[in-house]
Image (cartoon, rainbow, N blue to C red; front, side, top):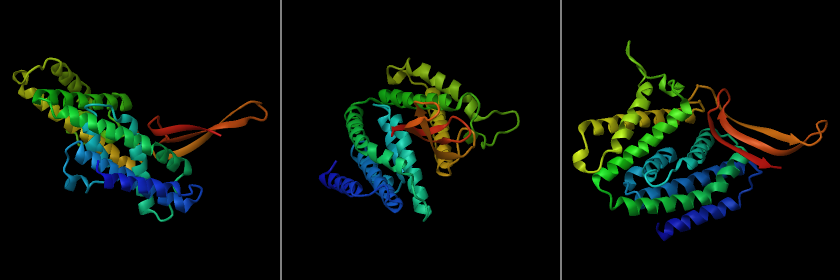
Length: 283
């Protein structure tokens, strides 16, 4: 990335380090600074390493920018570990931006600030890897890699939600006698997965392979978009419950006078096991 961008990122970090997270108003400022940091970093990686159009990407909010970059970087390294931080920050920023009296939890702000540098290092490293590898890929290699990327996303959704359609899929319009599109996700990913193992050259590719990839992309992207919308509303995409931030103490020692030695912070559904993030902090 260019030197001015690095200077801007360093300036944000410098201001962030001067913010007192014990003060609720300053936590609002910290969230906006962190959002700018993640926004700027994702934009530059999207443009310089992933070849995306600057004018298009810069009009996106953080969640959409991240998704555009993530879908490409997934071809060289799994970015899933960063999803929870990006979406947690995005949700915090939305609440701060639209509520004058929203004061983010200190632990939440500290958690995002604590991973900002690691996120930057990972993003630039993965961006470089993608740029180097993608320049020499043939069409069939790109087809297989994109297929495998969306197969991996489908696997994660099936693992996360299970076999039955989640809350995010139950708003689909289904005609009498038809099933929810989500029900066909497993078969679709398995069919495409089997075919990618047989593709060696362009002549091996069939029309149905392209159709299956298009259908898989549409279903995965649709579910992902619904999940993002629901999370922005603090609604659980799995069961429809409320996404909340909670903290609980872990105590030990004398049963009659237990001593708290750690606090568990969790962001997730209050009704089911859907979780955006959890962290245990020693006290």
